[in-house]
Image (tube, rainbow, N blue to C red):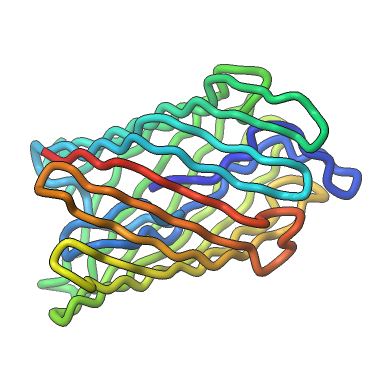
Length: 258
């Protein structure tokens, strides 16, 4: 999974938006039994047992308050059948409109995905994927308090190349941040043997007092160079409170699987 991060304080209607750990819900561009970014949301498919999925990524969001984003490594390992362990280490930046750019280590993430229902017996893949956001390593970017995301993800694949997945959950925040929830869904299609395209609808409730909810629509693509190297891209735009939350967002990554 991935998330959007507001890496610096942005003045929004008199309120300070200190960190938006948003994003999760549809992670499209999947193939049956293989899903992941570039979408904001996640899917229930864990990394294969004793295999690795490593993303080298860059992402960001522009609002009327400025531009923020992150680059880093998203590390996933199939620790057991149906169990994936995840660690994400992002270096974030924030550039407020008319202000100075801030850069630093943002919120390191630790997570574990467990799939407890399978399509071949239940009709859907279903997983839980709790995720801990550690306090930011920098006072200039990220959230200075720990948070916990508790989501559920589901997926259905069809033999004609279509897949649908999504779900939702809530973030339990510490410090001065408020709890918030998110939900979304993704529809993908295997256009060519190595090319998959998809679309996503994502919604998140307000994450701080005075900060509005956000809804966005995104398009994603995944191209498999070979069994080891994969290219991923994604763009989105908000359709609710657009100027305050998401004038446009992007995500690009190189995925290594082995």
